Image (tube, each protein chain N blue to C red):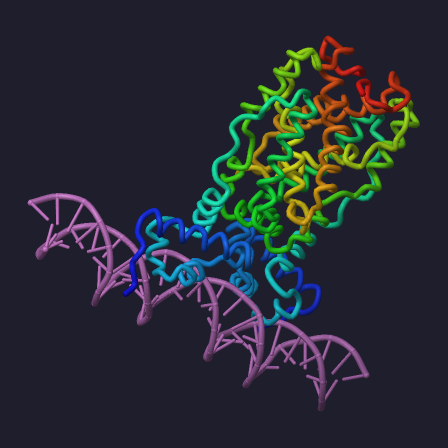
Length: 203
Length: 203
DNA sequence: CCCCTAAGAGACGCTGCGTCTCTAACGGGG
DNA sequence: CCCCGTTAGAGACGCAGCGTCTCTTAGGGG
């Protein structure tokens, strides 16, 4: 009577169920038994694939969100390029509640790297800006290059807030704040065309 | 035979035991039963005072670390004043492992505010800098004012790292990076004496 | 078509939760 | 100085979920 699922099909069903559990009850209440019950399979089937709930959760996230973005199309200016990146991040971050993030990180500290930087395309964006003449050179300190993303990530861990609950407008306001109040003034101070030596204007 | 502890004395013993458990086994493995056993008392004694382990842990932290700093003495310059604050933070942060932080925050999202800003003395520091003539005005965006502290907090949540494991030297290097590569250039761009209108040099 | 791998199901012992019950030490009010 | 109410200290209880294990049987590869 029951046609048994195998391989890909089974795995996908499990990961989708795990994701559904996370969304419905939060990470804290994600439970191997719950997922097994939801997919109507034995716990052993899960334990055969993932050692514990963190790994299951990470696999579920990777399954539903797909692979990370690889390249950022040229949007014409440094600001617009970074904005593109921030919007992409927010699009994914929409699914990361602080509860989920802290939960994962508390159980698997090394995991932070997964959410952390993809220095490749940021360097590329900087290089394009230098080529356009917006900035004099692209070799800024890593901390500066990553600053906008770090701030977005940090914000994503704050309070009870969830990106999903933020209106489009607030999101754009937040991005503008990061770029216009912090990042761009800083980049211009360090590598703006009016300051060609690449030193801060004051000592 | 056994002289029973009461009130203050008992409470202190419990909180110190809880703190010891956290330090020995980490927050993940902090358990009400473990603490009760360690202080040699009944679980009910703990549950009478705190509803769950998060509250117990927070109480323990507040107990061993004492109250927050209230004011920052004038160290003579904007940089030195901020440095004082960062050092104070690192002193306390020495006890917050990422594992502890994420653990607490995942179970009690509202808690983030406890670690978050004390805007009072930062504004005061800015005002002193303006009075000295280091900057033209003190009303910078909140995001800018809090930037160094946010970066320190964010760093404290990263990876497996723990402030306690960082040598004095690395700590100072990290602070210098934050202040000299990011914060001060930014502040000077926004309110440096050479840019009295308080606008970024570009755009 | 057969056989071996793995799915589906659930029992098992264990740890820790949060509630409850019981006894007796302590200390404040008389 | 004693008595009584509060609460410390101890542990039993039922429950949830873990991670391991055993068992039966579906179904795909050879």
